[in-house]
Image 1: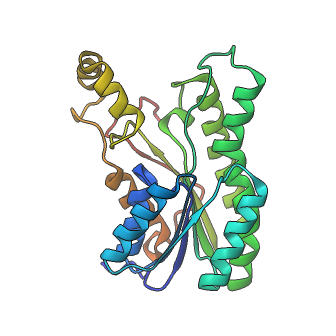
Image 2: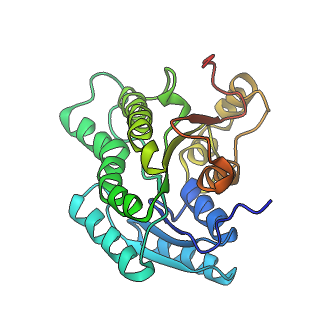
Length: 256
């Protein structure tokens, strides 16, 4: 199947490791010219070199995407290098600080900046570019714990907010042929990730978690999330907008 992505320009935030890295690889393999951001220079350059070795064109940009001035610099650099942005994948995210309702002001600010405001700020800069060129794709990486209860209180809240932002934006931008969707991964295992750390620290707990919480009997792989993102970025997803798609092996329990 030709996804008609050859020559398209994609910006993947948090694209140096885990799900973001897999998304960058997936888009590049379909012919996209890709820009990736990360805070850690070594990880960023390692992933960029992997993409180049496969024949892909990549622009790595070291940046803290929780800071507006850094986001502005990234978007400008992508425009100067590639001339446009056709696809935006807001993948920056994660869990930090206190896990309960007792989380302090600093914890909430970090989680809002990392998981929600980073996506909002980047989107605000990219939408005018997509409008001018007659369309585009925006894909926000949320979580199954943005669709139902689960995870730390701060994480649960901000990932839900990202799905709400996605739906609202999709309704507003549909007349501009800008399709906006979110993807909700379940528990994904990759080197250096939180599930890998838990596996190393407490294998007995993880064994029980797999048995009781993961119907397929295994964790998900970053590439399995990336495959869905690549489809949503393509011309084949031309009637899909405002959706939140679970990629979780039926881990979640919500009926909707």
